[in-house]
Image: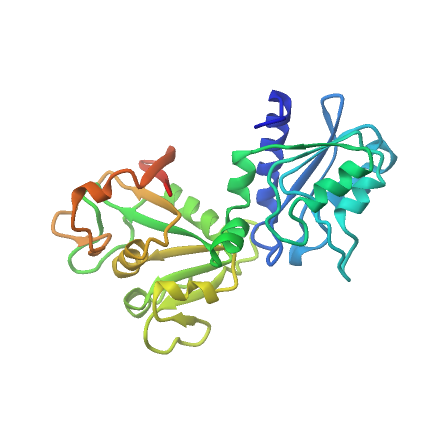
Length: 324
């Protein structure tokens, strides 16, 4: 992180973890988190509230009050510089706060703020450090994808046997993985703005795609189906993966089946892979991914980088990021 020391990196990583509390309710705003630190201790914190307001920095400053004077603010995204009927610009609040220093984990690509937020804070005599925090960028992946690519950040989820099947040849698929892996999948679903399945999966399984976690309200992300036909009640349809530009979301979770997985991979629209692998062999089952149009084996290499691997009960989770 240019301009940031080891302590800065630690606090920014902590802020990035806190930002998870803002997903997905902060949409259409990014899920941002902020920490105010004095003498190695967090004295206030905040994260973007449902609907996008109040912003993380505004909440943290309100919680800190006069104690913010002389302290350091760590924020995952550059504080906004534009005014809104729903609240003041965070850069102005910070400029008037008496903070000694602000450390920013990622520059805001929004042209209304990009660079202007940091400049306004610096003009008030507050030190500003612009860091390159990988954890902050990851926490903002949907917002950054929407700004740079005009579409949501796409995660493809697959629950597979050791031999790459998602079901028996008969179509039976409940359950490939165990309860721990399924619970983790529920957490991932709860963090998405929208979820998508293929038309075949919808017709065969009639999935609810709600969130079944203790303490959760149960309302899941918006439900989309990849089909050239009409969508049933409670669903919305896109005819091709490229249509995801019209989905109002920062984070899209593609959950099935093999045709939808292949279509998104063939279109190179998958940013992240979640592979839940069960220690079973099916043999002759239904493949988890259909044909993606690969001609040369060499073209398959260098595309994916493992970012995480963990054990969930008897199953294994592997997480991969698309190398672009």
